[in-house]
Amino acid sequence: MNRDQRGSALLVVLWACTLLGILVGSYALVARVEALQARYQLAHALARDVAESALIETIFSLLQAPDPAAPLRIDGATRHLTRDGMDVRISVRDDRGKIDLNQAPAGLLQRWLMQAGVKDARNVAAALIAWRSPILTLGQHQRQDARYRAAGADYGPRGAPFASVEELGRIPGLGPATLKLMLPDATLWSGMAMPVPELASARVLAASTGLDPAAARQTYLARISRPMAISAATAWGTVESVEVSAEAGDGVRATLAATVRLQGWSADRAYTVLRWQEDGMP
Image 1 (cartoon, rainbow, N blue to C red):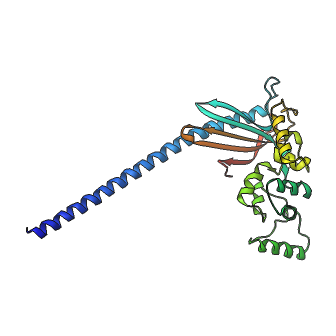
Image 2 (cartoon, rainbow, N blue to C red):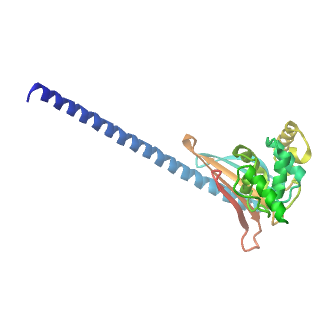
Image 3 (cartoon, one colour):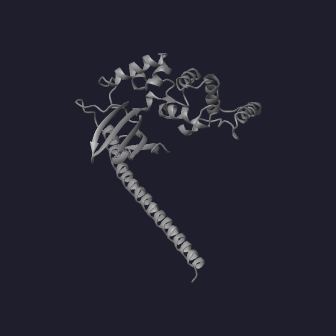
């Protein structure tokens, strides 16, 4: 073998070693990523189990006679506890303190939209009313469809009551950031035109009472620092929204939220789940 051939062979060997090193490094990286994914999935599954257990316990607590020494708050205040080494946060909100999308009048909807930062709140409130209202004539149908097409939508208003709170996202003028603020305050099940102030969030309190946002926030914080003004011994048929999050190590968190109608122990089912979310997804 002459010098040129030996040089070529050396280059081939070096190239092969480099390629082998790249392959080994790639396999090691893939193995590390898979191990991290498996660890995350295990931690998330454990956190979800803890969250689900706490959520079910909370629902059953709502079905019991309230404990005067430690009443269960139903105004959205957060309760903290530790379970299986995880930080668990629980909040219960009676839907009578929310905005009923099918019952709220236009003025309340407009003020609520303004609290969420919607600039064209008047027209968006009118769109909410139009979505849930029957379309009586062909002309009305065509005008509404034209408004939606102008907003880039390929559909028109339902012309019937909201079937889910997520339908709020189909109203032109409401983006993801706005919906993130509004959905926790929305319901279909209170049956009330106006929310109960003692159960409302700061944003709903401002919209329903006319308080400025800062005053509404102060009123809300003062309220949740005091004993409940409304008993948790709610009548059967009331609707409660329960949210539970459990945080495991490394910041892995599982969040479950359920909206339930309490029906009592004498019914076929003690409660009915109306809405269910996992990690913010329906």
